[in-house]
Length: 336
Image 1: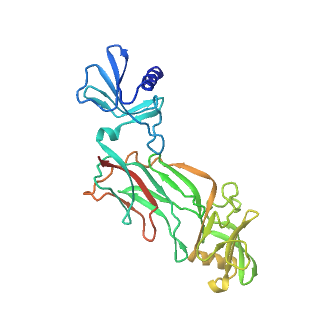
Image 2: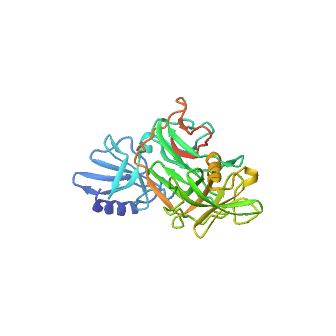
Image 3: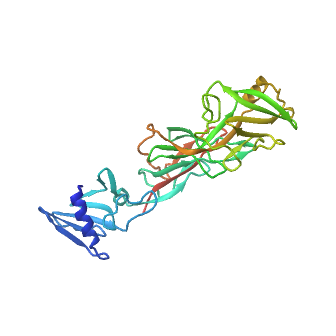
């Protein structure tokens, strides 16, 4: 559709009153009629635009509203068009109209299944996977989706105390990371500091494999991460995000990462090799907010995922042993 025809349509639709049909001046041997429902008997050489009230919010919002109306279908004779594109923008998507379905927002159940009553085998829309923060037995549960119906996803997704979360949008194939996972494990090297109140301070001074939260100088990545505090970060294994000298804690000062632990109660030898050995066997996980979202395009994801009916058991999502699935939602195609 070009801009001249678009302007013509916009003006004519603006002039419509209520459910009254309006006819555009004849274009060549054709005329265009605007209707609120598709006539069972259609006139020859007539192009019908089926209109509806515009959708202004949400993922199904009209990209372009023509004359205050949304377009759900264009028909000519026995041919019906379910999509229109103007200058690279989809200005109407009548796929659901043509297939007589409505969209129902549905969440994956406790069994990893996504299904709704009367689901039809049509493409799923608006599927998102949102990270969770779950702590059990003083450990942050791994939040991971491995696959859906054999389609590899293989992403960890988390949330933080601030309410921010990592989100995978299947429609746009984008992963938006708002939360960084920090693993205090055997890949880090340490320098031993002082001991106060039975708590020994260890500082990161190197690594065998660079983690996301450090620079190549083994300093905290202040350019991309918030300085951790109780509002934007959390740690597990009984470690607090704090600077209080009387408690086990994790904190950042002058870009140096400190981990302070009760070596006696944990059975840690207070040496560089001792803390490394301990964390190899007993890793400690922390989560902290990024300063700004990090967006990654996942080109390996499929363009379309087809919903499965109740009889087919619905779409099945897999995680891995010991992990939990993120919050997974999608708009399923359900028969009207």
